[in-house]
Image (tube, rainbow, N blue to C red; front, side, top):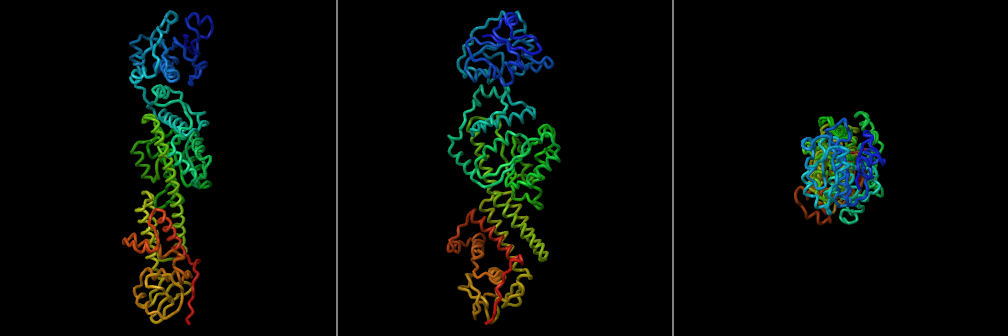
Length: 587
C-alpha cells in the first residue's frame, strides 16, 4: 500500500484522479484524516510506503513539521508491529540543504527512509524495495544516532514532565480511567516507546509489588486530611483515585489558577485551608505555568504560596505542625535548598523521562511518594497537637498575669522546640531534646512566687485560693512511703523525715506538693509525674535503673506520648480554673 500525506491547503484529495496522478493507493489529509493521535494509520502490511512532505505549514518552512511527522509514523510502526516500512520525504530543496537545516539529519540513514523532491511525476514513478527489517532491535543503532531529547523550552518541558509522570504513575497503579486526557502525542513520547523506554499501558502492575502495595494500604488506613494545590486537574484525579477508599479525607484546588492573579489565588487557598483544615498540603511549585516561566525564584507562585502558608518560626499561626510538601518536577538543588529555607517540610518530585532507566524507577519514586506522605501525616498528627497545647499554655500565661520573665522563658522554650521540630526528623534524639526543653518549664514553675513559696528552711507552701503550708518544723501534712517515691495520700502525722527532705527544696518535692494540694490529687501517678521525672533522669543522667523498675520503655512513641502528657500537666498547674485544692484540717 502506498499512502500520500497531504495538507488541507494543497487541494490534493483522496479521489481517483489525484490517486492516479500521484501513483498512490490512498491520500490522507493531515489535520483531518490523520491527526496528532495518529489513530487513523492503517494496519501494517508488507510494502507499506508513506510519502510525506517535509513541510506541512508553509508559513514556517524551517520547522520541518512534516519530517517530524514522518519520524512519528515510523516510531508508531516500530512500536506496534516491529516491522519495517518505507517512508519517502518529499522536500522542497536539495537533500544537502535539507540535511543542513533539519534538526535530525541522521533520519536519512534509517533503513527504509528516502528523500526526493515533492514532485508528482517523481512520486508516481518511485518504486522502492521491500524493507526487510523484521525486529525492533534492528532499528536500535539508527535510532540512537538521532539525538532526540526532551524539548528545551520551559513550557514544553513542564507539560511533558507532567504527561510522562501521569502516564507512568497511572499505569503502575492501574488507574485506567485516568488515561483519558493524558496527551502522549508527541515525537518525544513516540521515540521513547519505539526504543522501549516506555511500553503500552499494562494495568495492575501494583499487584506484582507486594511491598509497595502494603505501603499504600498503610497510607490509606491513616486518618488525616490532605489538600492538593495544583493547576493540573489530572493530578487531582490521580490523588483522588489513590484516596478513594481510605480513611484519608482528600480535597484539591487550583484547576482555574492559570487564569487568576496571584493575590486572588492566595485568597482562594486561604479560604479553602480555613474550611478544610488539612494536616498535609501538597503544593505545586509552579501554579501559573506561563507566568512562572519568566519569574525569578522569589516571585514564582509556589514560592509565594509557601511563604504565606508557613509564615515564620516565631509567628507560625495555625500553620505550625501542618506539613507543606512541595510537589514538583524541579530537581535543581538551589531551588530545593531555598524552598527548605522557607520552611518546606518535604518534597515529592515528579518522575522525569530524562532520568528514566526502567520500571523500577517508577516503583521507587511512587514508594518514596507514599512514604513521604505517611511520614508527613504522622508528623502532623504529633506537631499539631503539640502546637495546640503550646498555644493554650501561652494563652494562660498571658491571661493570668504571670511574671514577665517566666512568660518570656516559656515563649523562648516554645520557639526553640518549634525550630528543632521544624528542621529535623522526629527521631529519638530530637524528641529527647524536646522533652528536656519542656521539662525546664517545671523548673521555672518552682520559682514562681505566685504558685510556690519557701518561707523558711523548713516549710514549703503552694498557692491555691490561699497559701497552703505543706511541711513545717514539727508537723507534716504528707505521709509518704519512702523518701523518693511520691505515691502519696494526704494525711497529717508527725514525720521527722520531712524536716530534712523539705530543706532541700528540690523540684520533685515542689511539683508533688502542687499536684497533691493545688490540684487536689491523692496519687502522684494519676498525673504521670513519677514517670515524667524518671524519663527525664534517664535522658539527662543515663539512670536506667528506675526506668526498668517502672517498666518504662524509652522510644519514639513513648517520648511523643509523655511530651504531650507533660504539657497537659503544665496546663493544669498554670490554669487557675483547674485548681481543685485539698485544704488540710489540723487534727
